[in-house]
Amino acid sequence: MPDSSPTKTRVAVLADSDTRWKWGALTALRIAPESAVHGYLLWGRATPTARQLAEVGAEAQDLTEINAVDFLAEQGRRASGENPELPPFDVLVLSCVGGTTQAMLHGLARAWEGAERRPVVVTGYVGVVYEKLSDGLLLRHGADLVLANSPYDVRRFREIYEGVGAGGDSVTPCALPFLGGTAHDPGPAARGERPTRVVFAVQPSVPEGRAERAYLLGRAMAHARRHPDREVVLKLRSKPSEHTTHIEELPYQRLAERAKEEWPANFSLAYGNMGEVLDTTDLLVTVSSTAALESLERSIPTAVLTDLGVREPLGNHYFIGSGCLASWDEIDDGLIPTPDPGWLADQGITRGASSVESGFTAARGRLAALLDERARDGLPPLAPYYTARTAPGYLPRLLARHGLDPKGEPLADQPSNASEAGLRGASKKLLRRTARGAYRAGAQRVAPLIRRWGQL
Figure (tube, rainbow, N blue to C red):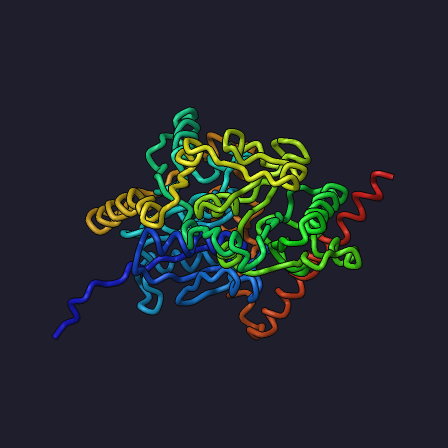
C-alpha cells in the first residue's frame, strides 16, 4: 500500500557565520514548520566552529562545509532532478552577508537555467538594520521573499525597492525567529532569593577602539563595585580564536584578563546561548546589540548606552525614541528605563509568545503560495535588480570576489571538489582549518598592529 503521508518540505540554509546560521535555521523552521532542514556553511573567515554551532542550538538533518562554486554546482544538479541521490530542495534560505547573497542569486540563476522546478529563495537580516540600508537591501533583491523583521523595516524596505523601480512585492513581514522565551520575573531578585543580575551584552565590532572598549569594561566593573549586592556579567560573543559575523580585533576577554586583579567578586564573564542568559537577567545593558530586542520582548528592563554618544557608527541611534537610552552614570544611580509602547510595536516587539508566533503568519502564507505556484507552473527565473546593465561598474567586481564571472558562471581558475579529488577528506579539512586560523590571526593580531604603526 503506498505511503499517503505528506512529504516534508525540504529546506536548505546557506550561512556564512554563527549568527546567520542561527537566523537562517530558525527562520526556516518558523516559516516552514515540520520541514527537513539541510545546512551549508560557506567556507570563509567567519565559518563557525563546533563550539559556536553547539551554542547557537539550531540543528539540521545534515551540515556541510562548502565553498561557493561547489554549492552552486550542487544546487544545479539537484534542481535538474537527474540524480535520485541529490533530490531537489523546495526552499533555499540565503543567510549571508549582502555581497555573498547577490553573488549566490546570480550564480543560482545561471545554475537553474532550464530547470522546471527551482526552489523558492528566501533571504533577510539577522537583526537590527542600522547601517548600509540601501546597499545591503539592493544586494538582497532578486530573492522571492525578502523578510522584514518589523513594520518599521517593511516600510523602509519597500520604499527603497520602489524608489529604484525594482518593485517591493518580495518584501514580506516577519519576525526575528529567536524572540520569545521566558518572560522576566522580577520576584526572585526583589525578594532577595538571588542577586539582581545585570548583564552587559558586548558586540564584536562596536565600539572598535581600545580606549572605548576599555572604558565600557571599566564602567561595568565599577557598577559591580558600587552595587556589591548585584551580580554583573559580561556576556561575550565568541572566544578570541573564533570569528562571528563581524571581526573582533580587541576581544573584551583579553582586556578583562589584563585587569583581572581589579575584578570585583561579583563580576564575571559568560559565554553561551543569549536566550539562556536572558532567562535570569534583570537588567540588560548594551551599546546597540540585537540582544536588546530579545530582552525587550521578554519585558526585561533594557538600557542602550549613550556614554560614547548616540552615533550612527555605534548603531545606538536606531534606539532613538525607544525610551531605553541611558548612561552608566544613570544606571549606577538606579535608573530603570521604561520603553515606549509605540516604538516597541513598530519594531515588532509584542511581549507575548503567541503574538511572536503570529509574526510569521504572513511569511508562511507567501511561502505556501509560492510553493503552490512552483508545483503548478514553476517559478520564473531569478531577476536581481543589479545586472551588467544597471550596475556595470559594480556587479562584475562583486561577482569576481565570489569566484563568478559577469554571467554568474564559475571563473576558470576557481577550485572545486573535482579539482581536489586527489586529496583525502581529512587533509582538506586540516588545510582549511589552518588557512582559517591564519586569517583570524592576521585579522585579530597583525592588522591592528599595522594600523597602529601607521598612526606613528
